[in-house]
Each structure stands twice: as structure tokens, then as C-alpha cells.
Length: 184
Image (cartoon, rainbow, N blue to C red):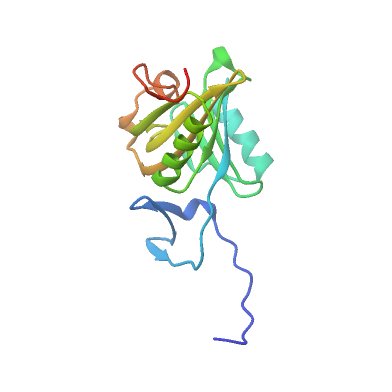
């Protein structure tokens, strides 16, 4: 309908889901089609907190957003404005500290391109393909430097609550037998 002005549409970020490695927007169970590229790259900030319920309440008010995923000892927010993936780990002994940083990208191809770019820059990388982390199946590449760990990752699918027992113990830590690429 050309010439008809359409009302502004606000998209609930919690309606995004992965389908065949691609981000898909849906209303209920009905997929919506969008024209043009849908950029989802956003910075991830993973924090250790002493009390998950208190932290969820605080960040919900701060960002006017509810958690996109909540599991025992774990919550994540897909904040629309500012574009941010906020991840909270209940870890009282490390409360108030940074767990790690990351960049969420749209596809496994973008993870591969990031790992190649990092290796070409002479940075040591650790690749994890098809790993279950943060209650999701992911492809990722880790890079460490300047006293900080970063991951570039994509979520391939949601994982059931039983798939990762203790997030604080096993999640978001580079593997003990990594595939190392680049400088050492």
C-alpha cells in the first residue's frame, strides 16, 4: 500500500530466535520477514554478582528490560538501547568483578571471519565450535590480551536447562585443550 503512512513499529527484542543459524523475528510462532540486513552485533558484558535476584531486579529497572533467559545462577538480557548483551553469573566469591567481554554476531561465518582476522593480527585465539555455554549451543572464538578475555560468538540454538549443570564452573572459560591459532 503505497502512499499510506504506517504507524511506528516497536520490536520486542525477546521475540528474536535463531533458525538455521540465522536470526529470525517472530510474533508468537509466526515468523516475520524483514527486508534488508538485520544487524545483531552487540557488545557483551558478563558480570559476576553475589545475588542473582537482586541483580536481575536492578538491571531490569536500569535498562527497562526483563531477562531474555533465566536459569539457576544465570541470567542474560538482550538490551535494545544501548545495544548490549548483559550476562549475569551468580558467583558470590567474585561478586562485583568482570567475568569476560564479548561480541555477539549473527552467524558462524562471522565467527570464522573474526578468528581469521585475529590470527592475521598475530593474536592467540581459541576456537570452540558447537559448544554448550550459557544454556545455548554456540560457535565462538576467544582472544586474550591486555588483562582481559573477549569472545566473538553466535548462538546456534537454545540448550535445555539440563545441558549445562553449573554455569559458574564450566561456562565461558576457554577449553583446556584449545585449538590455538596465531601467535603464542
